[in-house]
Image 1 (cartoon, rainbow, N blue to C red):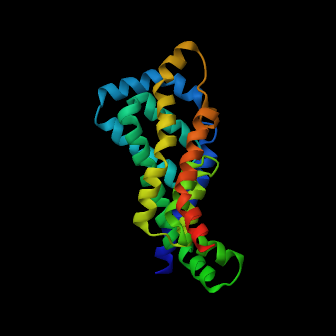
Image 2: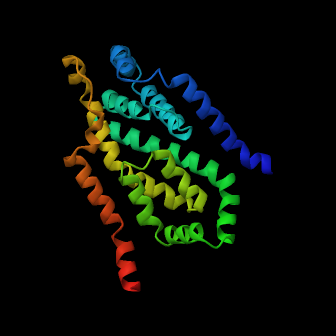
Length: 231
């Protein structure tokens, strides 16, 4: 039983290590630029198979926390446009995150969660605080781009967040960022023609980061209101 519980996490960690070693220098702007015509030709020749393969690849990248997921997101926008590209990107990212979450939650997450519950200290108080405000905290972690995506998958797993709650907060929380990068990807054709490189730092520009931080603050508003009432 213990081996069966840890097997998914073992496979994910092994895949993540292999993926990092094999893919870290194989994804980037130049690869997408040099293969863009072949990708477009394959998409046009296989209109049903291409989205299915794209979603499968994206899920694997997220589930194994492989480097270069941002380039997969841009590719989704480049191949499929803003719509349905954003649907494919957000849906695949959510599914991949859910796979990683479940692997950790059923593996080391159970033991760590039990030890936290049995403890009495700062970690226990932090855990209780997050659990008491799960939805606002989960949404804010997704909306604020400084929180690494895989970290936002691991923390809820260690804290024993409900599967459905994790899934829908992930889906909703990544829509703004997914929409922005899909939009950038949809404009790559013009970028290629000009011989330029996409601005991947666009999400940190004030006109983009400001609204994202505003959404994150709004998601945390119930926590503030609760704290004020208790005070």
